[in-house]
Image (tube, rainbow, N blue to C red; front, side):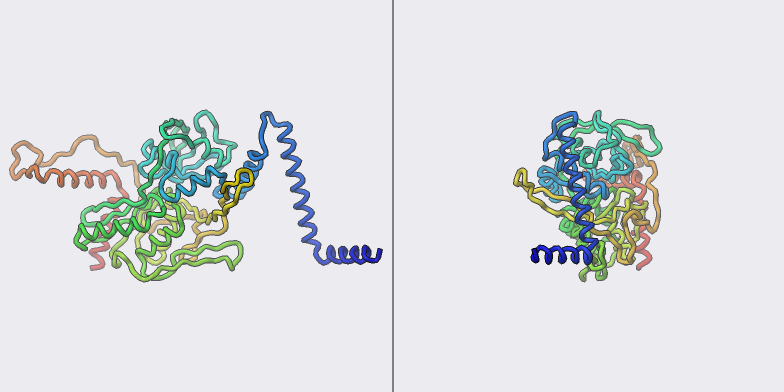
Length: 422
């Protein structure tokens, strides 16, 4: 009896000293009990049979997705696809998406993918997938509907600003991403990054080396094109930025607590030797792209042109779990921090404002072939046929600049900066 009384006194003292802990525990237990009751009711009364695994996975995904559009549950299948995604090869349409106002919003299509070729654009809203309305679906549900085997068709219904609702038919394919592409425009090196995968840093370094070799180290400067780049791996964004900086902070991530701040800094060595650099961004430039643009802008290492970026400045941590149902790996994406540029500006919801705003405009290539004096029959000083391929290449590049207004202005700006620095 004495022992029982002593225990009761200690328990009362514990409740008195720790009322919040006790109340929190009681509330949590009550909510877990409510959750279990709802699961049982759904299992018993839902219009179709549904197993525990599906119910629990949907509940977890709904809980995470309810926090923000970028958190979510990855079952075994999605987990495996995620590992493939970061290596630059995966199946699907080739679009980076988020959820906004209950609909799927396209952050950007990825270069040379089925969605890109079909005309899907950054900022498009997908309101229907085949015959299924998107309203009411989670982002996981929408992704699952858009997945499929290579060669399978899919029809998506698009709402685009300034246009009536319309449909686009796309054939699913295996997406192989070439993260980096490069060209030379009249002595200016052009570097295009479509997404940040494991190959991006090495791809940029190889491209710069190739451009230097072709121009005998006499390149005027560089254009870094980050348009419609949905982002990717943080470490690759840091490494790419480091290529163009001698020193200084690149980006910081800040979590819920002040002690959760992590700073990433540049090491010595600007690979392009301080030559003029212009970066192009647009509304499809997100996450890792914004980190690069923001750092180069804050350090005044590059001039940023184009239009305001997407504003996705949150950090998702991938946390693995072993699924007890299958003993296979699954995981969650959980938003754990926000990105900040070196000057301390948050990217989240704000984006990067370009130094010079340049709209792309509706520039369409002219279908009529342009001719010059040398194209005329029996023209004097007509070029020999052996030079025709070089001439054709120059014509293609010039045609590209006539169509791509932002790129044309970027190259002009690099030339102007080169003259100014001299």
